[in-house]
Image (tube, rainbow, N blue to C red; front, side, top):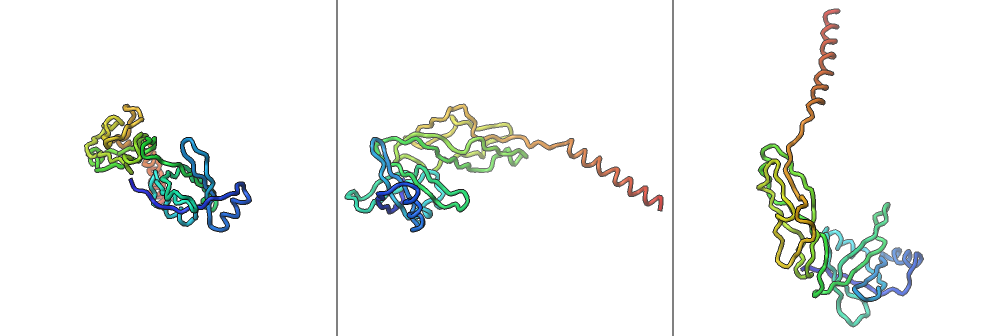
Length: 213
């Protein structure tokens, strides 16, 4: 399990005013909390957090180094990130403490691998589900789960129960839920016929004009 380091400092003030002053200093108000413990108010550097988010991973583990604490680091998960809708600047972050001996429940992205034989035969691959809800210990958590779709022919599908997951990982989604399928590409015949019909009068009118001339 890969974790990215991030420095943080404890803040003593809360509310809109102090939060605004923090953002003016390129800092973001944040909270750090865990199971059975009170939340700790933090401030983190906006640019440093941006670098982590740009990694584009769905579940980002972070080693928080809180300034002034005896404990060297806190393993955490970026649980929530609030963004200002217009400027797209971060406004608040929530970090949840992770314990290596406690299972997590998270959505893991599916990575579709291969070219379905049905697509080569004229079908269309449809993604019915793009992630799986799983539970496992943090050390067993995969970044993604590969799903080979190369054997899918037209009319065939893959369900949750067909997916092989790493050892130690338990899937919580119902087994009969569809994940991917190859469907027949539908052609709109009436629209094509209408287009041809609309072109015929125009051509006839052009010929009539030529005869009149």
